[in-house]
Image (cartoon, rainbow, N blue to C red; front, side, top):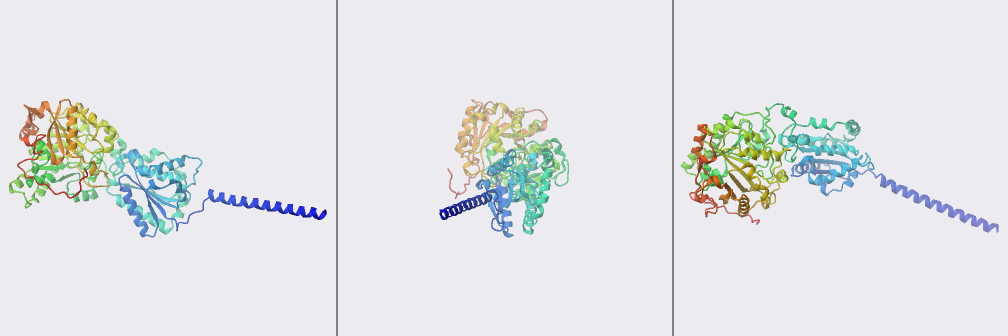
Length: 638
């Protein structure tokens, strides 16, 4: 009995101990498992490459990131080049090194490929469950790409990424870098910043920055956001910041990057000058330019003139293409200069004398004409005519009406009996009102709705639509020839016939030019392809439909097939006894200007030749010229 009781007690005790040991072991394993889940081990930086994110809309930031990636790899610093749209932000707490190259897009928002990452960081900062140590094992650096022309929107995205990363406990290894594209210093600024990043990573200075970074963040946690915005506002360009706010009045007199103030800044910096010169521009002074047009060369060779020759009778080989302002207030998606020119909302640069601009433009133009001597087809007669320009297209690039002395410049041209064709982008209505008589004044009408215009023109002004409408109203009061110029971009602005027709009554233009967009090759600033280029048949169909909407007020008058361009004209003014009179009597125009008396567009019109009339077999090609067709070796996209 006693033996049995002892055995039973021993067995029970052993079972109890084994059970307790099992429970303790399970608890230990569970706690260890939870500790691993809650507190992940620090990844080994030698085996886990850093992440280099590019947040880019048009390719600028991506290109910079690629350059930095090559620099990092060449210094034996392993990094992955990452498009954030393919990255899972939930993995960010596992990263030890992160570099972000970020552009600012529309209204201060990130480009589309960075929206999710940005939103995730914002939500994490606001989520009390996350805490401020989520990214405590992460070291990072941010470089923002933008333009001070957009005022308080300048590099807003880059600043936001820096602030959010620090708010989640990440350590900023170098100060936020900022690059202003159109100041011409972006590459240099990015290069200096990149070298600093590499030096910090290679020398191990990161650890020394942890305490300093924490102190900075504590100090900045209660900063005034308005104060930060005030510190960064200047004016000039960008390739990727789109449609920001208007500049504040106090900023107009700020000291610029080169230390000059109140209009003394030089518009054409050395970098911009080099870029434009490479494209064939002859830079005049500090803000003007002249360039020989391909149609000037074509008519010098007897191979046909441009659409203005067909529609208005200009002599293309005697036309000088120039501008007194290389700056513009828009960054249109179809810009044929790929946005190498500056942008701005007001005249803020050193100003050259109008007489100097005109004289130099003519001299530079003559030099370019002389270079055509000996080219096949160029006769001595046409060459001598070309050396005496009779027309000036103030539409080379930029916004000529921004130049404060535009009236004096126009007067100088008219004194030389050189006609003027001035194009404005409809953002400066007050300048249109005060403009002296122009041979033919154009307003660009690039879209029929506010939303489409914002997407196509990418204007700097926040009130761009109101400025556009006011510009059309100002055009209505002009007595000389006025034109709406429509550039059709397939897939962007070719569907709004009714909305376009509503503009007729606002500006009451004499003519409406409708032209298919010209494809100028790929660039980082425009995503247009050949698919966006309408055929001449498309332009004709659009033009006929638009004319029909006018209820007989306008009819299709002329076409130039080669330029994919069609002209609508007011019937009651320019169709006399069944014949169109869209051409210009240039000598009569100059006589009227010289008289100083008021005159209107009817006073200097001339008969349109039959070959230029819409539907003619010649398609707007002058039969006195020899047609030359190039062989096309690329496949049609039709």
